[in-house]
Image 1: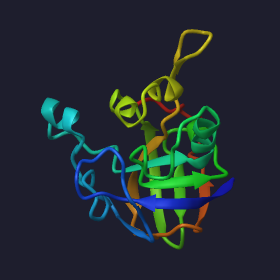
Image 2: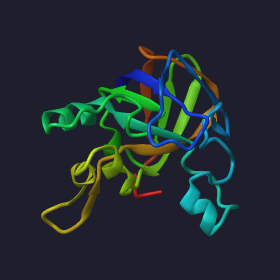
Image 3: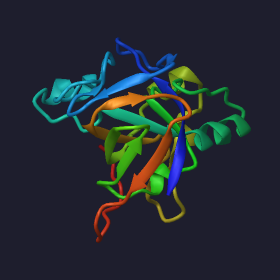
Image 4: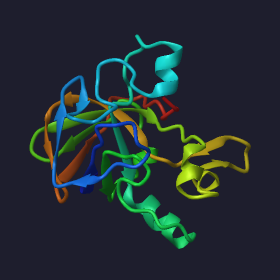
Length: 180
């Protein structure tokens, strides 16, 4: 299984959207160099308020460009970085990956998938009604989170648009993604 990096983004401040860049540097155990969410312990404000010593399982946020396509078809103007992701991908079913999957990005970077992004109401501040597009309830009553996945950097390196992504599944039995 393989795909492509469509865009890379980072923001030094806690903004909802992140500007696109020509490259980002991933740092092992830390995240995206220069990004407000980089660090070994949690950086998301609500999690810091609860327990600032928690490990940061959300160092890198990835969204599949196919979600942007779906949202545009539903009438929303969404581009890479708009939903706060660091890496926009194409060609990989990110939401279908098991926990512990390794994503090899570009020449050397490796991100381990830790779980699903749990979208919050800030998405509606970006575009009213958008939360209902990325946080749904299935026919069986279970919650479906479509706002991307989170990961930690295992091996650092530069990542650029156009870089290949190689998927390395963990040993079975696979554990489905849960929110982190």
